Amino acid sequence: MTTPVASPTTINELGDLAADSGISRVHMLAWRDLDDVEAGGSEVHAHNIASLWSQSGIEVMQRTSFAAGRPPRVRRGGYTVVRKAGRYMVFPRSVMAELAGRNGHRDGLIEIWNGVPFMSPLWCRGPHSVWLHHVHGPMWDMSLPPGLAKAGRILEERIAPRFYRRSSVVTLSNSSRNELVSEMGFDPNEVSVVPPGVDQQFSPGGAKTDHPSVIAVGRLVPVKDFPRLVRLMARVRNAVPGATLDIVGDGYEREQIIELIESLGAETYIRLLGRISDDELLDRYRSSWVVASASIREGWGMTVTEAAACATPCVATRIAGHLDATIDGEAGLLGTTDDELAGHLVRVLTDHDLRQRLTTASIARAGQLTWEAAAIGTFRALAATATATRSPSSSSPLGTQEAS
Image (cartoon, rainbow, N blue to C red; front, side, top):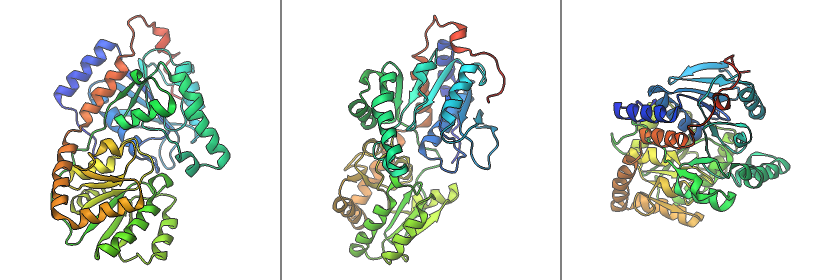
C-alpha cells in the first residue's frame, strides 16, 4: 500500500479549513493502527487520512494499542503513532491520558469507534468528530464468548449511542448511515457520509488469466466468512470446470479454512496465499476475472473498489457498504443466498459480454473515489464542530509530556 500524496489544491483547501476552524493539531484515538498484525480497512482509512492531513500542515497524533514487535512511538506518513496498553486497556488509558494532558495540546479530536467506544462526548471539550464505519451486530458473537458478546451488543447499540446524539458522526456509505440511524438511533442530521478513496497504485494493466479465476482478499476472521466462499466455489467449480479461487490474507481461521478445503477435495483449485506484497496483490487483482466477498459486515468493502480500479468486477454479499462500494447490476452483482451468489459467479465467469459491461462500469465507479476527497470531507466534518468561543483550557490539556 502506498501513502497518498496531497496535491497543491488539496493542501490549500485543507490549510484553509484548518486556519478558519483554528484546528492545527489533531489527536486520533483508535483501537489499533496500520502496523498491527490484525489491521484492516479501518486502519488503512485512518492512515491515509492522517497522512494527507499531515502533508497539509496539520499535526496528527494517533493514540492506539500496543502492537507486538512494534515500538511504542513512531513517525509514519508524516504523523505520530503512540502505542500504549493492550486491546482492552487502550480505551481507559487513552481517555485518562487525554484528561491529564499527557498526549499534549490538541485543537481537535477524532474518535474511531470500532465496536467499543472511547465515549468522547462524556469527557472531550472542544471540536471533535466520531468515525463509525458500521454497526458490528453479529460480529460480536463471532469474536467473543456469549456473555461478552451480549454485553458488547448492548453497549454498542443501546447504551453508547445515547451519549453521541449531538456528536458529529462520519461514516463511509449511505447504506451504513441508514444502519446507524435505524439500528442505533442516531439523528440522520448528525451523520455525514464521506466515502473512502482508492489507492492510485490500483489501475488496469496486464492480461487476464487464461482460465476463469476468482480472487478474494481480507483477514481470515469470522466476519469475512471465507468458509462460505470456499463452499460456494466448490459449487461454481461443478458448473465452470477449470475455475480457481485465490484467497489473499491471513488470520486465526486459516487452519479451519484449510481443513474445509481438504474436506471438499478442493486443494487443486482453491489456494490460500497468505500475506503477499503490494506488487503481487496488484498483479492478482489485474489478472483475475472477478473479485468475491462473502463478508457479513463491512463499512465499505475496500477490496471491491481496489479490484474495480484494476478492471475486475465483483460478486459480493448484499450488505451495507457493498451496496455503495459497487453499483449492483452495473459494476458488480450482489446476492444474499448461496444460490444467488453461486449463480452470479457462474454468470460472470461464463458470460464474456456481461463481464465486459461490469468491468467498464467498475473502472468508472472506482474513478469517482479519491483519498484527497475523503481527507477534505472528514476534516470539514471536524471543522464544523469548532466554535469561535471555545477557551484554551477546553481543548488544551495540561502540558506536553509524553503519553503514558
